[in-house]
Image 1 (cartoon, rainbow, N blue to C red):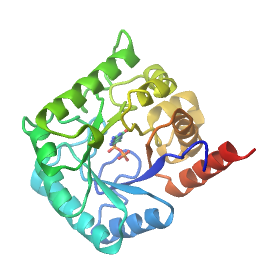
Image 2 (tube, rainbow, N blue to C red):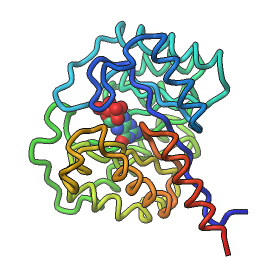
Image 3 (cartoon, rainbow, N blue to C red):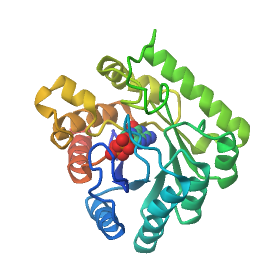
Length: 271
Ligand code: HH2
């Protein structure tokens, strides 16, 4: 048995015309399904399906459009594979339809704050729920975010959201927490949160880390200015998460991440 269990790999499938790194490329049902199948072949344990980009400045998506984008894809993936599916949405109705179509995880970057009935809907569905920290709203979150102690504030927020979810009836064992890398954070904030991952893991909830291709990587390495050129930085951040004991990493580059984690795990169990 390995001394360090590797995190699960959550592969990102965006069906949006404007997502920050692969926007537009998979905005087509057949292409999105082909991409999903490729990520499964590449070693994804979970597929995260999103129909609304949370990139600063991204246009909001009407519920009917979001449903039309993501639900056929969830159905098609479920028909093709037993892979776990998470639905990346802030809308309870989209989460509900996705769970009915076979998703088992609601990944909510708004941590059940975007609609008054979100906690009750999560409880009623009985699915797992990812509660992510975001400071402010997607549109303005990167306008000079400030904290007096970013780690303590993100931790307090996540525990409060977990409490709200449980008060509405979500089981404790179904709750994941995510520090929300890039969501209302400077490079220094992101680094402080990654460095503090052992403290988040110690809270006793599964932790999800999403650093894939994010902008702080280019701030550290200006040569990685383009989002397609941030693989090395993404792997470094996610390996730091693995060492801290996170439960899953949310990534675009599934093959490379799965390989890095397999080597990391093998080294950890060698003697
Ligand atoms: N990051 C994005 C979207 N959803 N969910 C969780 N739980 N954690 C994250 O870090 C996270 C997330 C990034 O947003 P987007 O602009 O949609 O880009 P992409 O989906 O290509 O990463």
